[in-house]
Image (cartoon, rainbow, N blue to C red; front, side, top):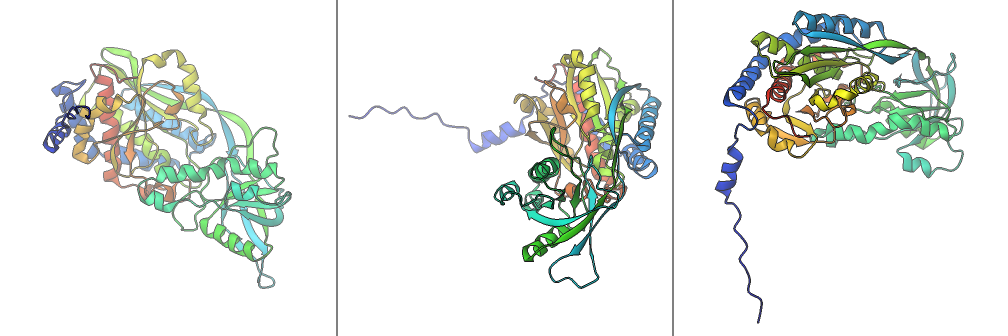
Length: 473
């Protein structure tokens, strides 16, 4: 005789599930506060402030590599604009690298099937922090490895005295599916660690296939980091097309290349985070950060990386001032300095404000361009998803209602341990086409999409700053 079976409880019907999805309560906000969020949203999408500020940062000030005169000019400009809005402005001193790009050329001087008396140009750019070749350059054979495993399988001494090319491909299909950041993280390891790995095996220099998606013969720069105790060797990124060329020719026979890089690492210099507080009306000691990084690489003018993040954060303060909104808590704008070469500004802030982080309610950072945001990415407790539902509902009117969990919400705010992080969940299909290239310029910005990102930043910042209960942490 079998055991009696207890019927399983019936799950919710399709209609009940739909009703649950459609039913969004006010959560930590009153109907009036939700209406204010809608007002901020609508004001953001019709406001030209962010676009105007971005045009000045990119076209008038230009590239803003940490330690450069343009970076200091950007600090002064943004501080002045925040003072003009009535915010309390502080320049927080930090020490940053001062790396200067010099001459950078590459050419093939011998290869299978070459026509006598000719060379072939290789389009490349030095990686940030790279050391220089000799002034006259170096000439050496090129060895190609698609990845670290292939390099390990080579005979001992295979790269000694040679130029090693890491030919790791950026996964364009993954990026096209909306996972550009995942594709980037898979390939960027070779840019960051490749030079030290190559040097440990005796290579004379290293080339890295550019970490990006568009094959327009654009080299993508970015920082490299040398390991202690290992010789520093010259390092450059080559275009995808030239990486393919080198791989094809090296498969046929010996390829010799002349490489000239003349960057300089000058003594570190003083720079600043720009901090601007829109003081809270009830709890000014409690802080919600809205931020981007002010520095950029030097090949382009830093429109998508990260001028856009700076100006949508500036617009949050602008809209609060324009609409006369004073949340309970302080909304703190921060223009971080030196995200690109190591995050010195964010590290300084985390150290200087360590005793205050318990009063940091949340930290927003925008650093993935200015394409359409489909919602909010949050880093912290799982309860944040339920907490943010009313806010996401408000943003549904601009197609930004999704909620996505992540390990972090930005390179800079990740230094603020224990503070919930937030960022717009942006369309990343095209960002890495221009990221860290000479094509990162103002024309890549769609004003409508820029304002959608500004709306997400302003609404989330206000929501966190005026909520009856702080975000879970």
